[in-house]
Image 1 (cartoon, helix red, strand yellow):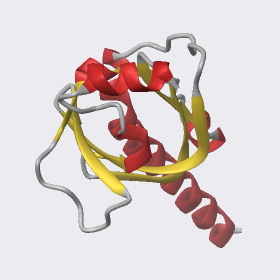
Image 2 (cartoon, one colour):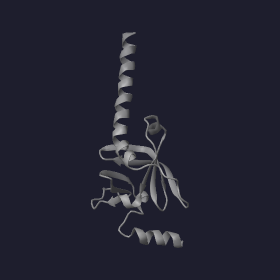
Image 3 (cartoon, helix red, strand yellow):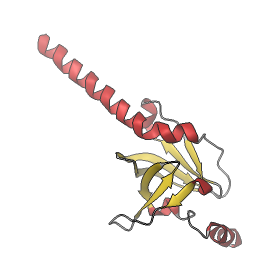
Length: 139
């Protein structure tokens, strides 16, 4: 009986620590950027890997991009820990000059937080943002 209580305590402690770490990664951006409606046309992929600062949220973020925002939607496990949708305007992101070793990822600065994510998500973040927006509208 005592062993069962120890196991239950350890599992509860692991869940509490995991929730704290997830909230530490997600909450700073969620406080700055509220969810916005998706504009047409939009494009998205599910279960993408992101790093927020030092925290990795691998395969737990659904992403939708449109002409105005990068929408980060929490997966079920993140929603369990009270994470909500974040819509970051393209103008609030800055590409970093130092790129990760893998070409399929890019690093951006969003409101003081370093975010590493799939390169396709950050296609519209560039000094030539207006040019890429015009090219997409012409197609």
